[in-house]
Image (cartoon, rainbow, N blue to C red; front, top):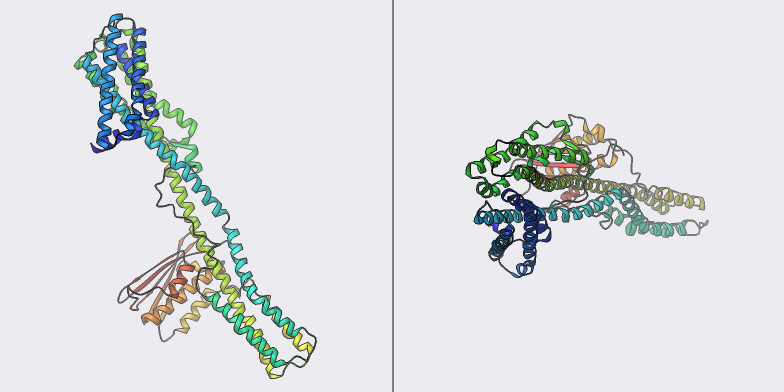
Length: 592
């Protein structure tokens, strides 16, 4: 009851669209009753009825201003009921005053007429108002989702560009730190003279190491998200109250026949509104029989839906509309046809010339209402498909972001490797040679500068080469031999496929290395099992289980957690007193 009251008190109940549609329904219903009960001047009576119906709904429309000023749900619902009763009573009195002098023969009692009209008005305003409200919310959300989907598509299309820009900026930042140092070294060594002090040159190189190279190595090895201003995490649309937008192609160009017929079944019970009218016009037995005839539409619609071939369930819009309309015409038309040609006991109270008109009005009313309800559910399907589409797009974007974090981390490691290896080695070697007196002439100094240039030229994203997971597994097992037993299980040979993606291979190696190290150092583990599985396309799963004591719930995240956050698409840890399990999912690309 509360739901009905809230629905009745909502603004949509008296909206212009609701009143317009209910007016058409009311006009069809009232015209049918007039045609059934008049014996002469049918056209004139129908004209009078139509004019009075229009005046009544203009009165309801005029009450919208007063309705908007009423506060409180119960008071607003009561106001609607009062104006519906008042409008229908006034219409009935006016019709009686006008129609009787022109010879209207009313075989329907006035209370029955007013009661039926009030029920029709009230039910129409409730149902149509609800459907219009749902359609409005759908359309509002359609526009919102359309903008979100377009935004997601643009972000997805630019991710490769963002990744390249992020790597470029990372490399440029490193060069911005190191190039001035190289320029200083060039001024010191590219003089073509041996008069410069070797000790001073060695001190310059050591200062470059201390001030430039080693801080850069520390920065690169810090497990933080680089260039966060370049890589933005996409907004999560799961919390939106999704209604619909520009749908994916399947939602925009197809209709589900099953889902469209099913809601139309709710139209059949609406015929209960006509029970007082049919009983009053035809008598109890004939009225109930007429309602039963018209209610045959329900089993007919159900049978059509159940027998519909599955392969023709999803169809393009135009043929789907034609077929659904045909189904409605058959389901609602057959009962009307049966009632129209029924034995005299159903129709002997009505002029046979009116039967065709009444049957047509009844059929159009039923088909129109059924289509109105079905259209809302077609929109609901389109909304659902768009939700699913956007969720997939959002998931792909999250995968792309995880992939970018992984690749930028890979770039960081490559740059750190170059600085720690070739660049640092070249500087240290040159410094030691200068201090030892091994540098005697300009050619030696030029050779030092050339070696520095060659080391700097390695500052690219190329890295130290293709990683080998099997070599890593052998190295890790040997490293902790005698302290902890480490076993690997790759029954599906996932790493053989992942090997084509160096960034993903490095990421998996680092996650395993960190997890094993933490288990032994912090949990005193003596056994660690690493299981590798093919999670889904583009994802590889790691399950790392150890027999250590695990971390307490109060433990704060450390460097390891930051590393997992940077490299994994998702990860979780479960600890107990005797076992700790890390589940991590990482991205990889077979097309690298």
